[in-house]
Amino acid sequence: MTAEPLGLPEVLLLSPRLLRDARGHFFESWSADRHASLGVDVAFVQDNVSYSTRGVLRGLHLQHPDDQGKLVTVLRGAIWDVAVDVRRGSPTFGRWVGAKLTADDARQLWIPPGFAHGFVVTGDEALVTYKCTAPYRPASEITVAWDDPALAIEWPLDGAPVLSARDAEAPRLAELSGRLPSYAGAAVGA
View 1 (cartoon, rainbow, N blue to C red):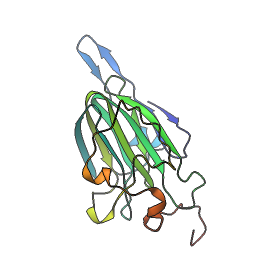
View 2: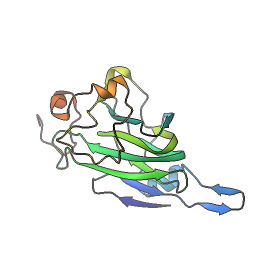
View 3: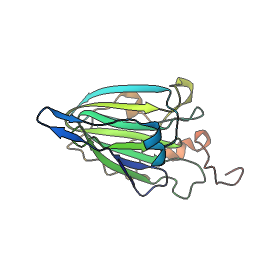
């Protein structure tokens, strides 16, 4: 397995070793020791699975408090996966990175706590699994507008995305400043 930083500290694109033969392929999706050696030294407490069709956009989501880190893997199909640094006081606040994840390459995206997460389905469908470092807590849930002009995320869309009501009505990042997590290196009161 290899890890590639993507331009935001702590966000990693992980490429597991795929063993392919005439039957298909096999890969190790999680190994505490191997992942820790690459910078993902966490304990997961919840696994989630979502199924979506072409054009569905989910996000941008995070939790605070009860911050969640997520390890995202595509089991079927393809997505464009995005992480946005929303930690108040962070030197990379409001910056985003994205990566194409497919079932064929089995790459994973590590999204640490303090980052908003979203994805859009770029193939006909996508079955996505993500391991979480904290349980889902509705009271801690925060949604950021996927199309916030201040973020200027370059979503690979052909037309309007298919959104949930919550995602369609999400506020812009600037409207959420009092609810966002703080950067560990930030001064008190940042």
